[in-house]
Length: 403
Image 1: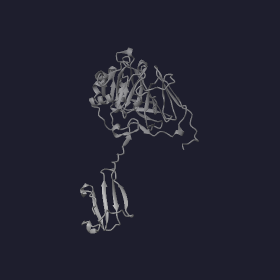
Image 2: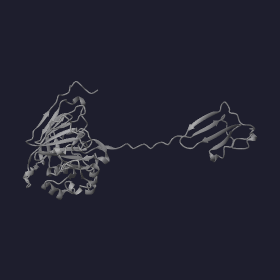
Image 3: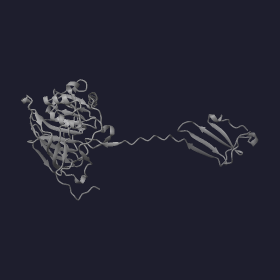
Image 4: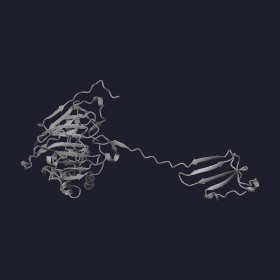
């Protein structure tokens, strides 16, 4: 008998003799999806070779009823597991972010609040938004970005000394276009990282900042997060670990949140109101008497921070030789009244700032640091004469608890 020739062992097949029966093993195919087909005989010990005719195999072997075909899949390679990402609290919001995001250099951008500048861009990407009296009764925003790289930001406006002093708490990249004389003098002398890193639009317009031709000057200077990060590298504002100055905690239990709670702050130029939403635990924001929530033109989404802080600060006219501009100066170093709202609750406390570059700290009536909800904070700075109103809202039914 002739046995079919399956080629040498090196070609993927071999013949093994078990007593007088034949075990034929053939490996078919190559790769992760191949199968090995094996015909197994009665289990007696195999011979080590020899003449097939000597074993009396003169014809083609017939399969035995006990023969078994076993399909053995070739195991696929074990995938390498993805490492579990390490998350840490962002220093300005307390939200969980990557280590790299937590170290991104703080960027503070001066943003216009003239009616011709609306709707502005960048609100929702900011970690903090400060709104402060500026000149002629018109307030101005300072958007502070950290863990999130924003899209479009602007319109960008001029610098003020007290804004620089708040931005210096983080040695921020301070972005503006021109400014009051005393602010520009500070930026010339201490704008290389001593207080802040100076990023003036008069230097960077045309490269990292640009004019929106669809808007009227001076309410049309813009930039975006990618270009802000580029400016930071140019001026040497490196990414570094930062220590939080405010305390953050998780959102409060939903059954403790009031309904109908509201905050109103009044500037000579406009009225800002927040209407607390217990379902989302946020403070939707409204401008003047609008019934439509303020929207960020950068992302098209409504503005609704997690915390609202009112700081009462003494302001006076700035003696800069330009009385017609009605510029102001502020006593932002020291202490004063603070009204802090988080989780729909209101705390009447104080703010303290020990030096120009020291942090602005928030304390409750017990003189302990206030805990804010992790998320975005809006800071409404009011002159002592500017009024505000708090509607406490209706307390929840204390018999209701989360299930």
